[in-house]
Image 1: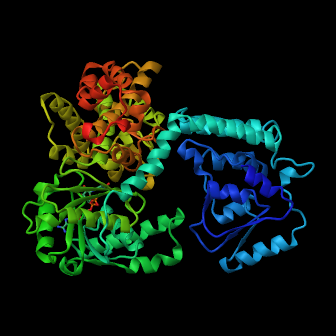
Image 2 (image 1 turned 90 degrees about the horizontal axis):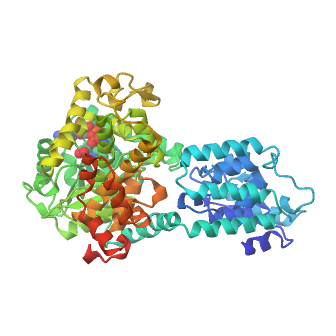
Image 3 (image 1 turned 135 degrees about the horizontal axis):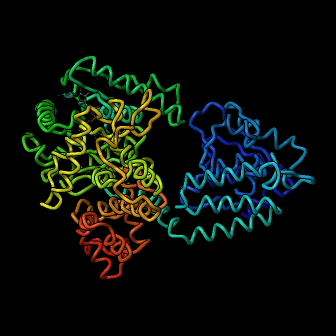
Length: 628
Ligand code: NAD
């Protein structure tokens, strides 16, 4: 912070020439310059302060410079709500002084340095006023509204937004220097908080560890095949084409294959809108995807991913045909989310080259990929799948053979807990609010609608319950989903499920007749009950996450936390379900779970690992893998 203060007060003009994204620390440096110029012709450039997403705040003076430069309202948008600006948006609000073509960037910066008459920041000049007014003047109401908005977005779960608001409020009422001291004190408080420790570990350190976990083969993949040009197949094809690979996508008819290509084109447009791809590269990327109605051209590919319907017979048929066609050195992957890998590959000629490669939707945006080897899968196949996932810029998590996927277990625990609540008589709106109140992006019933009730029923039938007690829970959920399917409310794709959907699924409201299918109002609906629902929705996912370690899906808590955050929308303020267990303590968690109603408590009572942690007084991240 001192270095940046010295830079901006040294008396010489300083220009920041910005030729890439400036986020966090990068933007701090730019703000300490007297003039900021950014290149115009790169649609992927973004400027912002993402520190709040790590439970921290900009602590090199950013909370003081930004409101003094662009006004309090806009600064709150960027620092508290994570708005990231394009170069033109940054220019419009005064964060950037000029936007120039890339080849004029250095020239423009040099011209400023040579000709600038004033080398002082606005806040160091006499008579300075904050643009738009201070927190007790023009920005009074925007500040009050921002506080209310932060309450509804973060629901009091996250200490960072409140700390940033405090820095802005208190810091802008005083001098720049005193404001920086307030910022330092708030930063120190956040840095000691479990939230920031957990979030930094799960957002930075653990992904780095997981990326190094396997050695990828030296030779990169050049050409892949994808069978099934549906939602997943078209997404996988686009993700691979974006990384420069040639892709052949095959489906049962020319029209279906073509529709997959169109879906990939639409997904590309949405990446451009989000600043994740450049419009000018679209044709070149899409040219790499060849759509076909036959499997023949897959014979020349090095890796094939099966992404057809989640139906064992259909998948076996496709995998057999691909196996017969591919040269022995090519590998075959399946994107199944529920089927066990070993039996699926049992009739293949070369079982060792078959592996589960579980992408998540929407594939071009979801970074996580789970790699699930079967019992017969060669280690070399796992390395090659790992190398391929890295090549297309994904974060691969390698699981142990045939024990299920982390993301499927955690996501289904969340939505099934929501269904149990509905079955007990809780009001659907209360259930959905409880989900959002813990920080989930959607309530459990909305997630059920997104998955589709026919697909969920299909998945439930493929995974029979473990014991007689679980069978009763299983039967309840099957009955509820069957009731919806019978009245053709399949979820979002059919225009209605628990919700009614407006055009293109954009707007939604709870289906008014839901009460006729599932009577609600039986359960007490006071504040204590709402708290219980919140805890249950969190604990159901924690229980599934602990189950991943307990049953050997993986023996690495990092893999579970990262998968839950990146793949299931698990509340990010926790740093992941297992980090959260360490934060609140195993004993507290057990006590909480024992206080639920009898059936719920029984569902959560089966975790041996949690009991061992409580008995030994240890944290998950402290114990050796061998002990787990
Ligand atoms: P989808 O229904 O959108 O697409 C399936 C495609 O497979 C269709 O285009 C269909 O015509 C094609 N197909 C069916 N039989 C075929 C055959 N014999 N040969 C060639 N093509 C054939 O399904 P989806 O959502 O893309 O799911 C595909 C797979 O990915 C499933 O195994 C699913 O469980 C898994 N998965 C889905 C998601 C998700 O969110 N949708 C997430 C992870 C994994």
